[in-house]
Amino acid sequence: MKALVTGASSGMGRDMAKYLYSLGYELYLVARIDKNDKPLITEFKGYKNIHTYGYNLIIEEECVKLYKELKDENIDILINNAGFGDAGNFTETSLDKEMDMIDLNIKAYHILTKLFLKDFVKRDYGRILNVASMAGFMPGPYMATYYATKNYIVSLSLAIYEELKRDKSNVKISIFCPGPVNTNFNNVADVKFNISSLNSEYASKVAIDGLFMNKLLIIPNNMKFNHLLTKIVPTKSILFVNSLIQERKEEWIFFLFLFNYSIMY
Image (cartoon, rainbow, N blue to C red; front, side, top):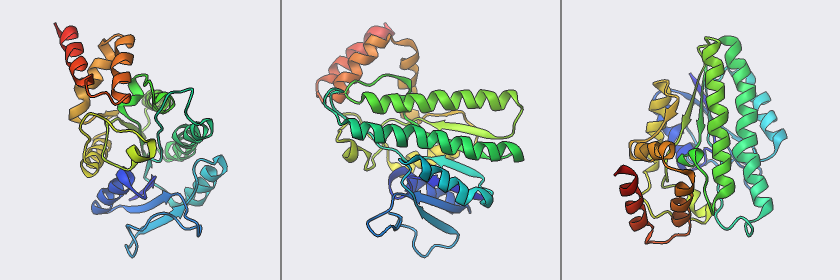
């Protein structure tokens, strides 16, 4: 049994890899490279059946190279996890950083999903886990580009699921949609959420367990009510609440309470 995990140097990528390793999987772990052209993965040195690779998945050609290097390894599970965010007013955030975000959060997912999925379909077996976010179900003022990238991943994965289902394929695709998770993501995005974050190890276990249960949408229990709200609450109300969260206003909790109360009663 073999699993490929991108963004495996830290956070959920690292913790999902650990959990899969405990289940007996041979791992192929991908992360960015350091100044010496070596993968930024130090957690698994000396482990048997763990292979590390350094690729900059922001670059399209690097995604294709990764696939070509591993296409003959008969990967059983592809976990697209690499990604980052950014916070700020859309008119003030860096265009270059946003283009990199789109390349990593969208194009890398798209390319790797498409290339490995073709092989999975040919042999009629394989699993894909695309790590998205609760952000994938709504717009996000002050994190507009990040939310949009996760919307793309959710939409793409849902469509692929239906195609596989109609083709009666045994290949499975799942989408992991947590809320905030306690990883280095917040530091990179320069954002602080005023809601509790999940422990990364716990979130990773929820994701992998859901994958093996063939769940389409994997949503941690603490976010299931929020997911329901995205389906029934007017978009303008969601925009209002999300803007308060991203602006880091402490009083947003009070407004959110009134908001929840008003829609429930």
